[in-house]
Image (cartoon, rainbow, N blue to C red; front, side, top):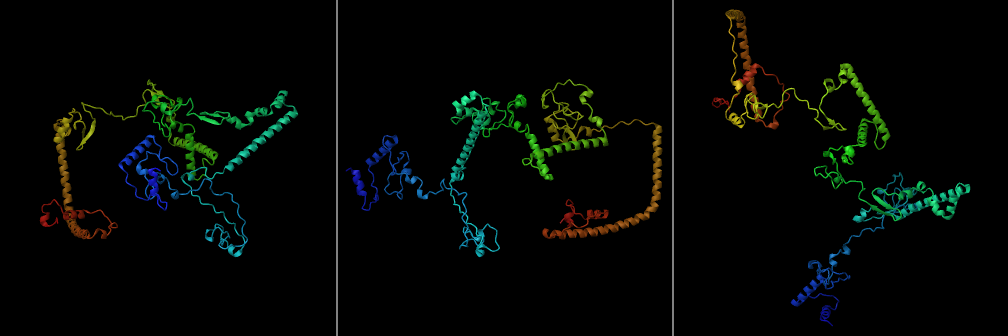
Length: 586
């Protein structure tokens, strides 16, 4: 008996508990042998450890994973059971065979009321507050008639992640077998009809002798060949190879190609990296890959997804949809998908009425204001002369060769640079004067001095030369006769002014005294009112802002001359040096 077995039997107690004793300390030799055995197992020279289920334990698993905790297996036998899912902790889900029952026959309703049933309808599967039937005036509990049958209570399914997303969950294969049987019956009925038709043609003598002999030798083959392409559409469809795939109807094998042989990938249309962007995720190339090559989009095999999207009937379809929305808002019930014919007729009639309205409006304007001859005039090029400018246009009107039509500009000269200036006159503004931005010069005909001129203008406040030197116009010498006439005119004017002043002085002397007294009285009243206003303002400033009264309903009038004079006299000036001395500034 080996020493290891003896040690094992010694460690086994009377109660059959294994490995409860303290593990003995391994000697240096045992530790070396254990490490060598692990190395041999990792190299594949020694057999791997086996757990209690007979499964091999990978020797490359680290020790902190393979070592068994003391609370799981005190014997510390080699196992990985503690790393696997524990069966007692696993959540139990519904199996694939479990599903809600369909088409359950209702049980026969009871003839008398049962204890615990619904007081309204008499069903035993729910209470009165959960009853979905019409509330009866007298419930089934008291009448004992009109009992409703018990509902079938469906099971509650607890599905896992895949079960909730399984599209075939709850599918019954017997449903498919019913469809197969139905198609088999239809095929059998077709064959019987073909055989009856064949017997009728044989009886009437329409078939030839060769067909009769062929029918006698191989009746089933001849029956399959007879009008197979016209009558049996399913078999005709099986023999066709769709573009992009090869289908063998006998072996039922489909071989798909990535694309058709003549098809070219979008990203291979133009290898220029600056051409249209190709999105590999959606496989979309919205712009035209031949945009900068000068090729016409209609002559190219592929002009971008946007060209396909905005060509053909897609634009008219979008216009029709927009018209349907606008018409629905106006009150007419039309819908593009529900009634497309009605919508198309309504849209066409709308277009005709719109054109008629535009023509009628144009005619009324021409009848009122005239000018129809200007609309019917030939082009300006034909009226003036034929131009020699060569311009080549595309099918859509875009210019391919030559210069485009010049944009209308101002009648004045633009961008004219004079005297070595880099900016135009009027590009600089300073102190109400225009100048050049390049040198800050205010003289229009001056020569550009550049940055030196800017420095001089910024250092000293220069006055424009044109404003500083006001040229005085030289007066022409007058004759003696003209000078004598001017002196006589001045004397006559002085005499007239003296006479007017004498007349006014007598009548206005008394009036002026009265007016001065009135003005003084008004000024005193205005000064008193100004003092009151200042006092009110001072009182209002002392009050909190939230408690102040609203002044929005006060009448606002234009101040008189006396009120303005009183305001000026009473106004406190901060720049007055005597304000603090007099106590007015405080």
